[in-house]
Amino acid sequence: MAKFECTITGDFDAVLARLHEGILNGSASASYEDGSDYAAGGVRCAVRVYERYSWSGGNRVSMSLTLVGQGGELFLSAITSGGSQAMFFKINTFGEEAFLDTLRTVLDGFSTGE
Image 1 (cartoon, rainbow, N blue to C red):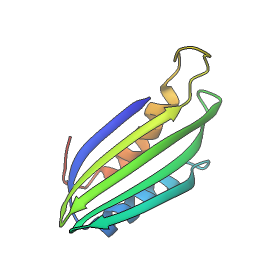
Image 2: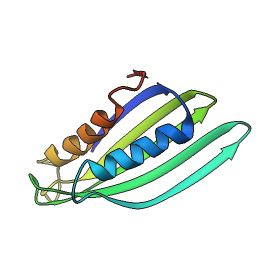
Image 3: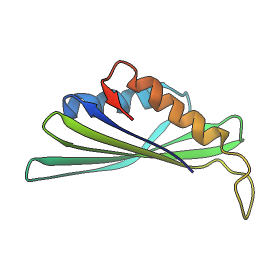
C-alpha cells in the first residue's frame, strides 16, 4: 500500500474531472472501476476507484481516490493497493508507487500543499 495526500485550491468539479482524465490517460491499461458522490451542508465528497496493470509487477494495482471539498478548499487522499507478489507480506510495491506518480503528474500545475 502507498498513500498520497494533499490540499488543493480550485473548483471541485474541474479538479475531479482533471484527475479522472489524467489517471485514465496516464496509462494504457488504466480503467475506472466505480465511484460515489455525496454532498451535505456545503461539503462535497467524491470517491473514485481505478485499476491498471503493473508491468513491473506483472499484476493489477488499484487506486482509491477521495476528494473532499468546501468551496475552493479541497483535500485529496489517494491510496494504492495490490501489486505485491508475495502471499504473506509485501515484497514489491513499485507498481503502487508508479500509479501514485501518475496522479502526482496530473497534479502538476495545481496549487497543492502536501
